[in-house]
Length: 155
Image (tube, rainbow, N blue to C red):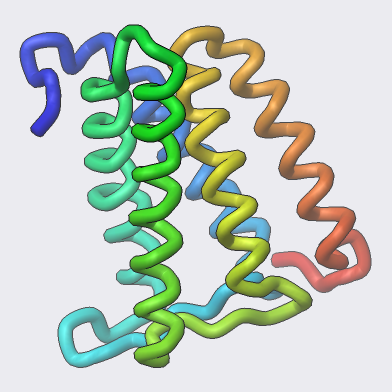
């Protein structure tokens, strides 16, 4: 489903997302915003995080970027909305089935807003990496402040 001939074009942003996800997992170790429930297939929260970081997110970023419409603001907006909608729908289903719960003030609405920011920043990083990093730092500072990380115990 992706442009495998040009995978090197998307590789820096795949690494960017992987790095940011690992950093977020580390920082939120003792102060989680969402809690994954192990199940019969994946037996630990660490395994879930690693699968998300090393498989789900890289595949999603590669597919998202390599199929992003080159022209047409309406098509680009619809494509962006589709990806946000898919991620939000999957999380909604997983929440209702008990696979994910929230903590420390986070909610499904926050996840929706996060998905919007995440897909915008992924595209920004792909086009202008420095601006993608700056936007990520700004979002991280906001999340760390808004959800009580400064006063929380850290690993």
